Amino acid sequence: MLRFSSVVRLSAVKTSIVIALAVTVSGCQKSETDDAQNGSVKAPASSATFTGALRNNEDLSISANLIDTAQLGTAVDGEGSYTVFLPVNDAWESLDAAERNAIEAKENKPQLIAVLRQHIAPGYVLATDLERGLSEKDGSVTLNTMGAMPVTLRREGEAIMLGKGTDAPRIVGLPIVAGNDVIYRIDKLIPPQS
Image (tube, rainbow, N blue to C red):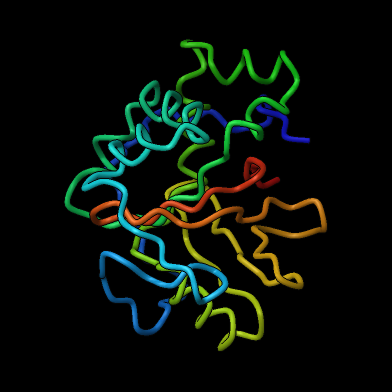
């Protein structure tokens, strides 16, 4: 279980830092529609901006509120491109009350920023690019994040998991293409690295 208190305090967080992808997934191209995970369903753009897309998807409303609290929306909406793995509402609601209160407390904003930055990877990785990368890299791809550690995506049967273990977060639903950004819904928070 995620222990919010184990996240290291960041004294100065700059939301405009862009870290290069650890693995460049070949063939990344922008388009308004791209194949979703099963290869046959299209994932339409839901908004011209990241923050607009969040407001248009009710299952991401808690993530949207926390992104607003952390003031990261403006950075992601900017000129850069990002691939964002956002926990659905059920993931946030599954935290115990103390963890949820700690995340939402204004005095813990640096920790909130650190947690959210672990979910943001610079670059534009569409579902087709991710599938291609997973096929070419023997089932796993590592992306740098704006957080302290990279995240490794791996195939486990039909699922795409983020991190190690059978209890790792997994991508659920269709990706959202939003302007310069791609949003993947995940069913758990990415835990802080020890």
